Length: 368
Image 1 (cartoon, rainbow, N blue to C red):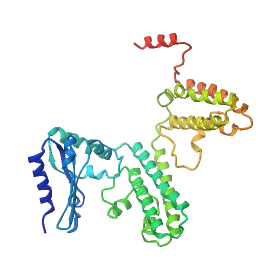
Image 2 (cartoon, helix red, strand yellow; image 1 turned 180 degrees about the vertical axis):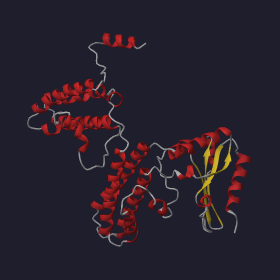
Image 3 (tube, rainbow, N blue to C red; image 1 turned 90 degrees about the vertical axis):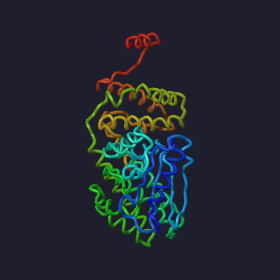
Image 4 (tube, one colour; image 1 turned 135 degrees about the vertical axis):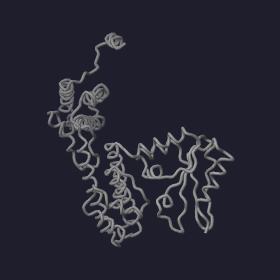
C-alpha cells in the first residue's frame, strides 16, 4: 500500500514549482497527525490561499480507494476557527504544517494557534448558548412532526441535538473537540462540567428504537445543559458598572420612549403593543447586564432577568397595555422615563442631552 504522505509531498512539490506565491500555508490534520489512522484513513489536509489565484489549487481525488480533499480555508475563516466560532477549531489547533510561504505567514498562523490556547470564557459561553439555540430547532421539529413513529426522522433530529449539545458542553468547558463525532466520546466524558447522566443520554440516543424515548432524553439533555450554562455564566460576574455598560443607552433608546408615547396619544394600538413590551424588555436586559457584566441566557424559560427592573420600582408596561384604554400606559411611560433617568444619574452616568444646537456646538468645542 502506498504512503499517504507521498500524496502531500506531491502536492507541496507542485506548489513550490507552479504557484509558490499563491499559497500561504499547507497543513494536514486528523487521524494521521493524532496517531489513530487505520488502513482506510484518508489524509486530511488544507491550505490557506495567499490571493485569489491560490484557490485554483483546490482538488478532490481518489488514489487506491482512499479519498483526498485538498481544500482551501481563507485567513478569515481560520480566524473564526481560532475564535471558536466554528466547531472545527481542532483543524487549526492540532495540524502539522507542510508548507509555509514566508516567516510572516508562519507568525500569523502561530498567533491563531496561540489564541486557541487561552480563549475568553464569557465569549465561549455566548457561543455555547448559540449552539443550544440550534438544538431547539431540532426539538421543535420533534414536537411538531406528524410522523410520531418515524424512527429515521427521530434519529436524524436526535443526532442534530446531540452534536449541538456536546459542542456546547465543550465550549462551557473552554475546550474544543479534538476528534470527529464518534471518536471524541472519551474526551467528552472527561469534561469537568457536564450533566450527571450524560453517558446515559448518549447511550440511549444511539441505541434506542423508541421515538418517544429519544425525544424525552433530548429534552432532558438540552435542559440540563442550559442549566449548566446559566450557572457557569454566573461565575463570570465582576460587579455592577453602569458608567461603562449603560453609556449611551438612554440617548439611543430615547426614540423608543417617544414612539411609545406618541402611539398612546394617537391610540395606535399596534405600535403601542410592540413597543410597550419591547421597551420594558430591553431596559430589563441592559440593567441585568450593567449589574452582572453579562447578558441573560435567552433560553431560560422565565423572566427572572427582569429582577433589576422590578427592584427599581419601574412600572410594568406589559401589564398596563390595554387595547381598550392606552391612557394608563401613556402615563406609565412618562413615569418610567423620569425614573430611569434618575437611576442612571444616581449611578454616576452622564447623559448627553442638550436644549439647542448651539449648546451642542459648545459641547463639541469643549472636547477639542
